[in-house]
Amino acid sequence: MKEYISSLYGRIPTIDDFADGPVFDPDKSSKEEYADFCRLVASWENDLMASISYNKDYKQYGALLKSKTSSTTSLRVGGDQMVTGWLPHLRAGKKKDYRDYLNRAIPEIEPALLAKFIEAKYTSGNIIFWKRHRESVNTERGKAPILDRIDLTLESLKRWYAKESGGAQESVELLPQFNEDRDYFIEIFGSFKSFVSCFKLEPFLTGESIIDLEYSNLDSEYGERNVLPVTEGRFSDKLPENYERYLRNAIVLIEKRTKALAPIFES
Image (cartoon, rainbow, N blue to C red; front, side, top):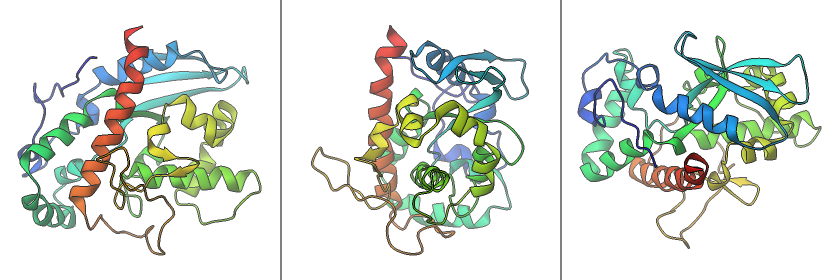
């Protein structure tokens, strides 16, 4: 299984690389894994996508996705890291609240755990494609109240699909973005289940529910798996109270997805 390390550093970045900003965005400088992931998706046998092609000449690199169900649907998509751990937020000097939060949280965490999380970030199990345009899902999920959390992103997408089908009418974060990308989510995937299946996101779910990355304990096979939605107020501008647990759970799920993708990469 190929291991990806940001070309910006020539090695796996550490928290110290983000301590004093600004620094370059790893998403813009680490494109080899996106190119491979794009080729991987193109190789999957599925009934959703006719093709997905990678072109390094796109601004910030990108891919073109074509639908099997609609001859007119051709969309630009871009790769992104699903779980960031808020390290990229440190590159912007105005993000003082993130800096203060991490300065309080990180000293309590073993350096080996941080290194393991950063390494997991640069593997195929942490990559996904969103439709590329201004104010996209990818862009807006980095802001409050989602704050780059893939579990909250998936929960919001699940609620959106339910709303589209006339089901539960729970509040949907990122509603304008999902509505804007309806041709991506509906014409390409059709359902939340198909979206999950196509991108091999099953490790992030238990049954039909999204695993909560903060309040679960996934270190063992029989660890506690709490699910979203949880108590009122979670979808507010609130960083995890237990940052260490969030990182540990993220590592477990990213590694599971990386292993699930490995046979496809190696075939």
